[in-house]
Length: 102
Image 1 (cartoon, rainbow, N blue to C red):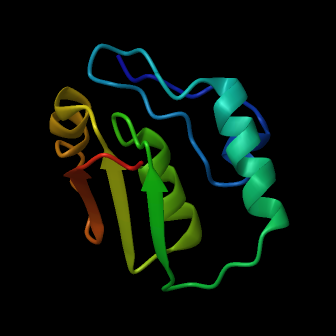
Image 2 (tube, rainbow, N blue to C red; image 1 turned 45 degrees about the vertical axis):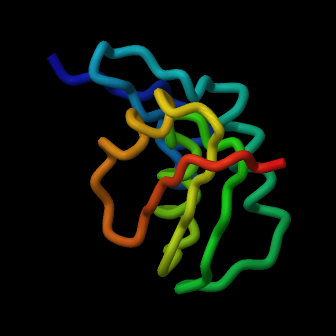
């Protein structure tokens, strides 16, 4: 059964809620909406590079990467388990590394 993201401003802005394999989305609707609103207010250009500190499982990094059409997006997190999960996301130009962002 396909999981459909809820109809919201997020999908109109190209920021789908990305379900995990178990069907749950850690990147909840409130955070997705906040990210979409933020991206509407900042300057960006296709091919730019992005850095996300504290990327967790990489869901927001993927959304940023796709929405901004970035050439490279690097997600950094101190939690090894989160980085292992994030590295399961296969997207050209999207990378994840374990490091303490502080």
